[in-house]
Figure (tube, rainbow, N blue to C red):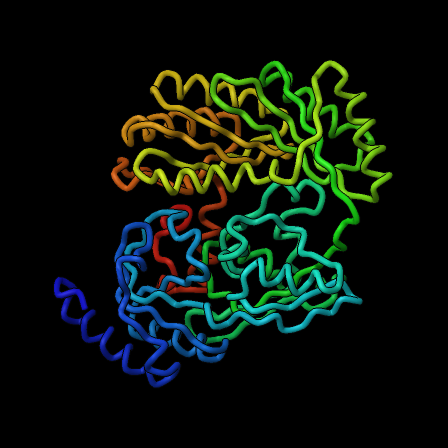
Length: 432
């Protein structure tokens, strides 16, 4: 226990720990270690409930004791967002990891929040189906975590974002209520749209215990065609031309590396003959560019950038950017200018929809200045920049940037769901 904590907090945590042990079993309540830090803030206890009723009860105990609760799945994205105001209790979903029901004839699956993406994919593959989502760190990342962070990659071009794939959730609210919205069939749209509301809310509204997703068949074949283009303007022109064509591609990404020509990658998923025909039509469309056949590893670019940044934790940062597809070139030109002035190196992966990530490498001070300048330019375009990873010694800047006109509504929703600000306090947009 932290000796520097206020006496009332120490007593509250001690009483909570006793009650939590009675609820989930003494072996499932542990003192937090350095590995349990949340964006640099040290937690005090880690509690791992065995089912959603236990989780809801533990959450109520913490809420009644005025303790700050940080929901955690695989722990792959705990650095995302702002540091919490406090981190009294880590509420782990590690034991809630079952695939509850795979209704393969309806193309839906219901799964507990602690199930990893890899475990879910292996289960669905037995029926030749998939959740069409390319999230980060699939062997560790959990369903609840990807929903809370709205993590998705290049496949969202064809299959939509998580808000399009999730059709039902069960959520434990701070007062211990288990709220359920949505259903197990794709056409069910009645009632309050809780699944879309909690997606990307960073666990600030409640703790996800279950989710139901729509599924898609695993493609028979896939093929990736890549080409190198002259500059960012060329990359944008080609990307827009591909989007305006009749090609049935599943993903399109543009990779930018400092002092190198951009590369465009296009993914086709169909039968072998279909992929071959689509690839040939693409090569004709890109006649002015040199095209090559690439492998599946091409689509690991985002994962590689994140992994390299976390390994080089004191010399790199990762930010997620969102702009219009017609502003990709302008964004990359701004990135090159800002990093050049601030002596920072960069790599970026942007998808055809205008969403992507950038990796900055340099000194913490230079990275901070570059991020602030780049955010200003992107927000001028009407876009956004959110920081997902930063050096510990980097000067503190807000992870989210300008919240816009939505902030009053977001605060009202937070107050309705979590009036005591028990869950992830101040981690989200606008200090929510």
